[in-house]
Image 1 (cartoon, one colour):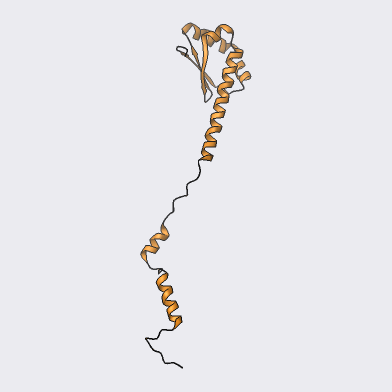
Image 2 (cartoon, one colour; image 1 turned 135 degrees about the horizontal axis):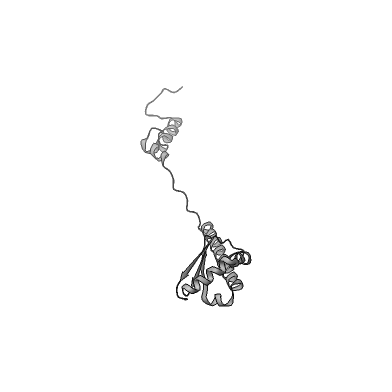
Length: 137
């Protein structure tokens, strides 16, 4: 048996010493703080967002086309000359008319069944109608 010599370290003691140097201690405050760190979420592609926006635009475009076609199909010739579709947003149909007389005539036609006919032909949801007096673009 060998006597214990403090200058002669055994290989087992060296391995333990190397492990202690390479591994941070559990009581190290920096290691503890890093454990609380919330990592930023990795960036995700924008394809999901773009797909949602595209579906929304396609739906709006389809509704706009349908209501425009319904106006052109159902409105009498003299009213088509006096009024035009500005847009449809959230179920609110906006029609442009040239003057107050045209506004009155278009309003009478819509209330007399024209609006219901436009809903059926265009297969769009129209909750309300706004008639605006403005110049045609």
